[in-house]
Structure formats: structure tokens, C-alpha cells
Length: 414
Length: 92
Image 1: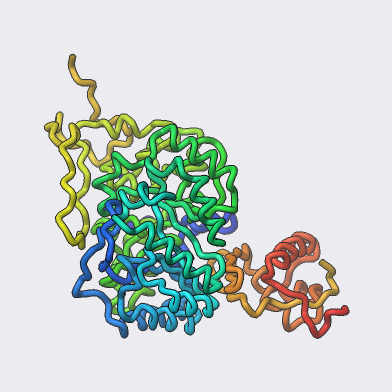
Image 2 (image 1 turned 90 degrees about the vertical axis):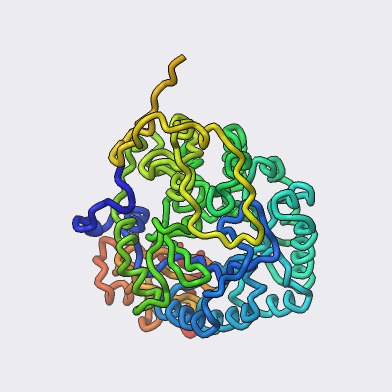
């Protein structure tokens, strides 16, 4: 297979003239459409699926002045808005200052919070701003389901934040839900909860990133749940936001609203709390590290000149997937989901709805890459021994050029 | 949309040039729209300085055979609030 690292960069094809927008996006844009910026690794919660393995602040986190310099650059690049997250961004003492700084520099802010600092007073302040959107995270429509994942008391905290926002007249808050095996049956309840608070429901996909890798096997929706989710999303249409999260479900037949494209390094990227730039929010790992905003030229230079991004902006080899009749709609799925489940990047998504990833997931010797960083407060939950990890490799490692998801798989002898 | 109408880009809209044309973002509705050719970008950004849509199309060098396609696109932009009828000549 061709990995992100060893693809030759000398032969980057030039952008075609005309063609569809998606084809244009594959060649990247002058600046990201959607930039996620995690302001801190510090968090008051310890969600078991945290994709940035947050908990403790990193002493190297960007200073207020460094953050302002990043915002100045985003303004110059005309990045219309940033998605701010963490960790819990609102526990950074300068969070409210940076929010105002961004908005006054024509950079709109959408921030994700667990609600801890959304007091009645802050809610009134937020209601008075023009270019700020708030996403309150909830992973269960009931306290029992939510708190199992996000921690005791987190449901009440999020609901209190939503109540404060609606009491202050903040219009159209978002309720952001990571869809899991445990909450996928609550989609209607989530929708009702959002309606009750004058909020919009936003559903996103559980990624095996960060601590998510520890719980992905038991929490990602089952095959039949994926079907339910797909049908539910089709019925909901534009009334429910997904951030283009579920394009792998397009393999069921109909495309869901959105670009249905992996935007990593092309139209999206991530800035982490220490200023490192990664291809997407779900890919905090050396292999997807493009540079740092503190290097000469700052974020703009990373976005324009990073070798990794140049690589991602050329057509990707998709191996066996190109033979699938649904390839045009799902395009092989999510790069980060493949990487963090130890699957080849040019094969099917681990949640391929046609089931094409099942042999690769069962492959003896499949290795899950080690986490790129870990800011968890307590020791990581031990990943219980699974047959995948204790079984000795059955042969030499699969050759890096093997194109088939079945490569290296041998039927065990009876 | 009438060729003789007077229009302008909404003051809430920001345009960012891109190799394929431009991104247009409406800070009020948070709606992102793609202008799929450089000519379209010239038309939209030129509206305010032109007395009519016709003038903006001509000035951007859009061949007359394509005007109907451009008008459809402008119609969609008007529906999304990206461009607005100009108050000074609203009666026109």
C-alpha cells in the first residue's frame, strides 16, 4: 500500500480546471474552510472516548499572545470561523478574552464545551455576541447513558448550561452527540431534548482516536445500528447537523447531506494546544503532523508548504475500494479511523457498511498504533487483552505495498 | 431576477478567493457558499458598483449565451441572502 509517508511528492499532479467542487477540494484550498483549534488539554471531565486524551494542561500550551498571533493570521487568511475545543476550552483563564479577540478580528467562533463555565452571567454575555456558536456535548439523552461515558454529574452540568443559554436568550445552541452503541437508540430522545431547549442537534461519529481507541471495540455502533443511524439521518435531512461525519454510511446507497469527502489537510485541519498542526482533529499522531504555528511563517506556512498536506492534496490510492460500486460516494471512508484501528489507509473504513473491512479487522497481527500523546489525568484504562493483541504474528509483516485488505490473511489450520 | 435590477453583495458576506473561484461566507446565517468560477466572483463583487445586473455581467466579461446560467446562480445567492436588492434603486 502507499502510506502517507512514502508516497513520492515529486509527481504531485496539478489541479484540473473545472470539474466538480469535490474534485477541486481534493486539491486543497488556500486556507481551511473548517479549522479546529484545541486551546488546552486541561479538562474537568475524563470522558472515556476523549479523542484528544485530555485531562492535564500541557506546560507548553500557547500563551495568550501566541494565540492572538494565530488569530491575526487566521484573519489575514480569511478563515471565517474556528471550531474551538479542547480539553475544556472555557477553563483557560483567557478563554473569554480570546473569544472576543477572535470575533473582533472577523474570525467567528464555534466552541465546544461540557457546560462547566456556562453560568447565567456568561450565558447573557454569549447571547449579546453576534458571531459565536456554542456546542454543548452530551453523549446520552439520559443521565445514566451519558454519565457512563462522560462521568458522574456531567449530564446535569450540560443541561444546566443549556437552560442558562436559553434563559439568557441565546438562540440556537447546538447539542453535540458522539453516536455510540449505547446511545444510538436515543436519537429521537436527543432530538426532543434539543427541541425543548431551542437547540439544534449535532451528531458525530465515534472515532478510535485518543482514549477512543481504548473503547472503540465496545462502543462503536454495530452493523445493524449503522443501518438504523443511516435511515434516521436520511429522515432528519438538514434538520440535524453532522459535520460531514458519517460519509462512510453513503455506502448504504444514498449520500447524506454534506461534502462526503475526507477533508484532512485539504479543507480541514487541527491546531493543538501546543501549536502543533495536524491533518484533522481525529489524527493527533506524528504520522499526520504537518508543523507548528510557532515556526517561521506560522500557521499560514504550515497550511501552504507542509509536505504532508501536499501529499494529502493529491489523489489518494484507494486499493480494493475502487472496485466497490459505492466507492464514489464513500471514497474509502475516514483515514483516521483506519489508521487508529491498524488498517491500511488505502483499504476500507473499519466501519465499512458493506462489511469489506471485516477480514482486515480479524487479521492476526493487526497492530494498533500507539497514541501520539496522552494528557489523561489518571492512568489510561488498561485495554483488556484481546485475541488480536495476544496472538503472535502469523508471519512476516504485511508488505507496505499490499493492496488487498486480505493481504497477509491466512485461514487458520483446523 | 431581472437583468435591470440593482443588487449588491450583503454587507454580512465575506469573499475569499480560491483557485476555483471563491468561498462566500455569510456571518449572519453562517452559510458558506461556493462561487464556482472567477467570472461569477467578478459579477458578485461588481454588483454594487454597477447600475444593473446586466452591466455587472457585461463588465465581468460573461458571454451573453451564459447569462441565463449566471442569473440562476444569482437567484440562488439572493435566496440565501448572500446578495441583496440595493435600496438606492429598489424601485428599478
